[in-house]
Amino acid sequence: MKLKLLLILEKKPATLIEEKWMSANLQVLQTVDNLKNNPFPCSISIFFTRKGLVPESLISEKNYNLYSPSKNMEDKMTSFDLLLFLTEFCTQNKYDLVLSSASGSSQFFPYLGGALAAKLDWNHVSCVNNIEYSEKNSYLITRNSSSGTLTQSIELPFSISISDPPPIPNNSKLDFVDPGNKLKRISPKDLGIDEDIIKFRYKFAPPVEPLPKYSVAKLNSVSKVFKWLQEN
Amino acid sequence: MANILVYIETENNTISPSSLKALTIGRSISSKIGATLYAVIPLQQISDSNRNFLQQIAAYKADKTITLTSPFLNGPPRISTVGKMVHEAATRFPPAIFLMGNTPFSYELGPWLSGKINGIYSKSTIFDEKQAGKLSCAYIDSGTKTTYNIKDIEQPLVLTIEGFTTFVPESINNIENISVEAKNENHSTNFFINKLDFIYSENYIIIAGSNTRDKIEQLQKLAKAQEWSLCCTKQYILHQIENKNKHPALPKFSSIDDSREKTNYILYGFTATEFSSIKNFFSPGSNCLLIDSEIPKQDLFFNSAFFSGDSAKLLQSLTQRVL
Image (cartoon, rainbow over all chains, first blue to last red; front, top):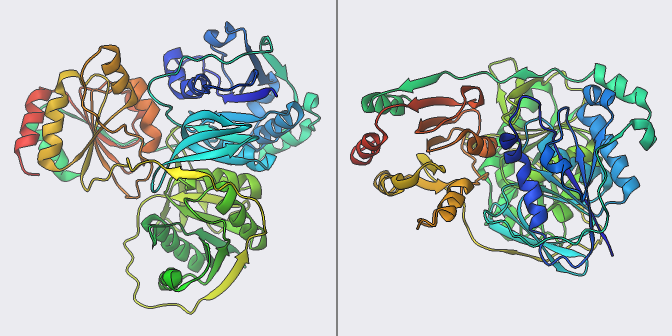
């Protein structure tokens, strides 16, 4: 058996420093490192969802297969188009495990893992903070629940959204079998999707407004802090 | 007539307060647009021990209850068990709006169900009756919001509602119960609860960031004196390990089981990066006091205040004074 793993990450906006980009996406990359005792050879692909740059640190990693939607699609795609695109991409490439982040800088990205699992008819767990190999093709995952920290066994194929992996990364390395590719752009045509559907939806995407900004008070004395605390 | 479905989550033989908030909002919206309000509750079987759930739902003025019964519904809710049955209910009674309380499972069920029914999912949703019945969905991660007019919804909305209910029921509705039974499927039953590590506090939650350093003892004294919760970020733990410092075993801040409408935080020694990694756990109505922290103003979608004076003196004063 070969484990086919797909990571869904956001590209780095040109204006954002790499360190900040890493804070949202590192948790997914770190979880790959935590797949300790996985006995299968592993092929890792990364799909980048938003407009921006692919960080140098990932391009220089030879074992990752990097994918992104074609450039003219990046601007037009709504969340539904992206979901359609990813569903086709996962079906055609027969991935076993999809890891995405439960946080992110775009509206839809934190929920992509769950929605994708629904489209693929897979099971899904969100806010996962640890994953490790158990037996056969099952893995143990740990996540928060209303009653406490829940550990549950999952069977592949599965979609997981990662939130805050354990603070100490495990250094065990996975056995890679495939050499990675450089970033490959995929158009809807490559996946057999009608491009006109995407153009049509783009025109009717719901409007988005910025969140209202609250006033940020500057308190320079202890008495002002007490006053602020009492007012709020 | 449109359907509004509210998912009712139970825990320790009680209905989660945030689910009751969702039910209250569901009632307001249903009355406004003339929709039928369904409460969807998963149960292993209807018995004397859980009959009070149905009475409580009736008291919160649901029109109908959909009970999802299955012998596999044991343990905490999961997509493989509850999710599939909720989807079956949503297929039989297609919702215009599907509401959930703010619980960890709602973050799992919401995106998954919206994928199944082609809906739009949003957490951090606030319903403002004064604004002509508009639903405002805030996205803290991207700093944006979308406003929906409840009378003009074309695509199903799947929403996680912030806060808990203050509505006190006075009478009980006559309620019709619809039973949806599970098909005989193999569900994974292999799960176990490890420990309780959530943070509950009536007042403030103090979060220690990576630049807290030698102030941790003062923060502990403050938390003890005021009976506030104290926790830390992942970066704080990493910093202490890297520097081989002894550090108190503080719980890591990762709580999403926060059903209060408004939460007060004191953030100490935060960097911009570590703030952005946890900000999605905050709700827009929160109050944040930032001490010795470097956070860009554009990241703050909360009522916030920066303290720029002597932090040691402030901590001492806060510890000594009764608030």
